[in-house]
Length: 285
Image 1 (spheres, rainbow, N blue to C red):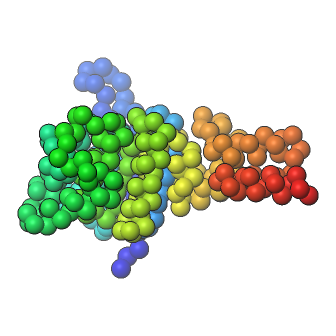
Image 2 (cartoon, one colour):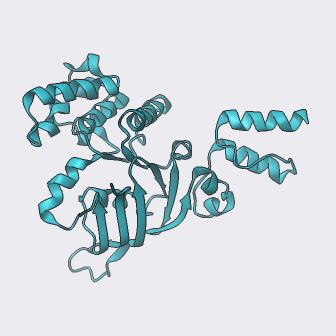
Image 3 (spheres, rainbow, N blue to C red):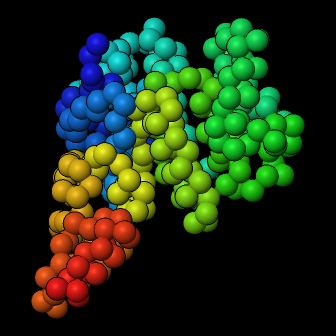
């Protein structure tokens, strides 16, 4: 089996300017090339306007390349006859869950996508129950979604995608509208999704602590990939990230500032535990 889930080759995309305004089209993606392995967890970072959400929408053919190509599990997104299969295998969770909730009852909403894919009724029931249990919302299955909190709505939106049984899930800033507890819940679901299903996960985010939990971090700026590596490899480049208007996890920032003051501590302490251990070892020495 090919280990590649997503292959993006020299991808260029621009939005056409308003008719008659005379402005040239502006590139949103400029010759982007990436390969994402099956089962991996990739975080994509970038400031507003960097192209990260536009890139996400190419992965399940919501947008099509103006130049270059995007291949999803070996399928070219430009092939119109493959669009339904691509969207079956790549699910998307968006920033605002209200944009994905279509029914007045939670379990009916989660069943919506499998029904449209022609999944048998008995199988739909099983999938809906499993998805709701996975996101911790089974007890709310007969509730009205509009009465739920923002975090609960986002979990319902995620369950609706999981019920499709996609091989890859793209999360497009799913925690942007949530409080810290809601963000933690969503990240726990993402890790559970990988652990129990082996799914490929692509997370578009501007929260550095979320990106630090990924296997790989891709940083975008002005429609291009400017960094690509493990979280440790990327986040130690503090000054370069600062220049791009991006921060680093708080633990790395602390170590960076200490090092500037002459304290000999490792910069790549990503977790709180690693940071605490490094500080304890330094001051104990």
